Length: 116
Length: 114
Picture (tube, each protein chain N blue to C red):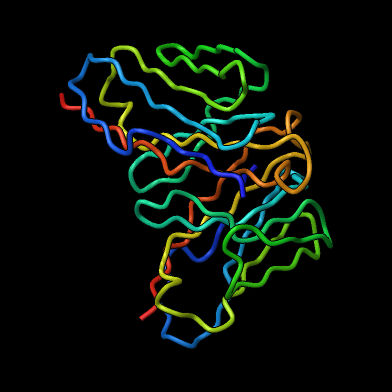
């Protein structure tokens, strides 16, 4: 049981390049999310998915796309990288459950992205 | 939108001293969760609280959920160097998009001086 696996761990991009951050989980979790973490800003939600084929925007979705074709995978695409997207990106998953029925999220180890 | 405020932002304590971090939401929460992130690591789920006034303990850690379900606290008794890290609270609402979207506070970074 690997949990939540993120690749790559580190990436340097040039402004304007595109790339995909990969996230896979083997726990059969329906809920998956992408967060970015910047110093002093905590964790901010980019996009989330409540199941295969269903995605929605979070707090800071601009410049990012997601898709959820399978339960296991939830890739995050940067369309045209900008220096403002330099950050640490975390993917997280959890079993289904809204509100009070929610359970804790399992986070991946993160992708440290630098855009120059 | 929903906001979760957390104070203090930083806390330096002598080993053996107690530590408390506070979390306040702008809206009523159905569920509040606490996470710990070690330096260079990823957030790790500690606990969740769902009932008004709920108190839960994990060894030296005590978690409380306010009566109005808008605030929470984490208290660590007799800190140890292994407690170093950033502690985040995160909240979920009862319904709507906020019931899926876990909103995080900005965290309290704890340093423990041996």
